[in-house]
Figure: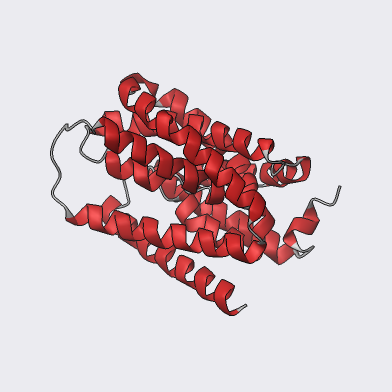
Amino acid sequence: MDVWGVFGGDPLVVVACALAVGLGALVQGVLGFGLALLSVPVLAWLAPELVPAGILVAVLPLVLVSAVRERSHVDLRGIGWALVGRVPGGAGGAVAVALLPVRGLQLLVAATVCLAVAAAVVADRRPRRQDSRPRRTSLVVAGALSGLGGTTSGIGGPPMAITFRNSGGPAIRSTLAVFFAVGALLSLASLAVVDELTVRKMLVGLVLVPPVVLGYLLAGPLRRRVEPGVLRGAVLLLSGAAGLALLLGALLG
């Protein structure tokens, strides 16, 4: 099985993809988000077959470990209502992946990245209310958007992160970690139903697991040395630039 054919047989593409997911994992280990926003535009440009199944397989060990580690303050009510929207959203995303050509998927990924960055910037500018629990309607809508984005591009975090932004810190980390783990499994299951989760894609995703793990491990020593606000701004800036570059490339290519 020609796994390396996904990378066009080019070692430099393999290295670039590994660096993208490794850097994304490092950022996620520090901030709690950023892996998909940083890496998916690069993967969609250099190795489109990796998106979304490959990146979901690559990050699955990370989100499962995070879910187990952060499970103590989980908001089960919030997860339950979000999953009400997550299931149909993921199903719709799987159908889109099955029907769209490569360029169409690249455009969808680019639009998802740009919208996610814009939403995060807007949310950052709004005042926060302490320990405010999201409403049911907001949770269902956020779950649906997360399912759609997560299954089409691997980027399902922003809608949920924005919805839970007014919750307490431990609740945010715990709830999002568990939701992302369940969401990744649901997305993979949805892709399998429409024959978009092949053995080849799973194997390629496994190739990217080591750089993901390495990046996450390197994040530990940096958590206390890096200013989160500065890093967050840099991540959003780089992600937005990558999303726009992918968008222009898909339009002009």
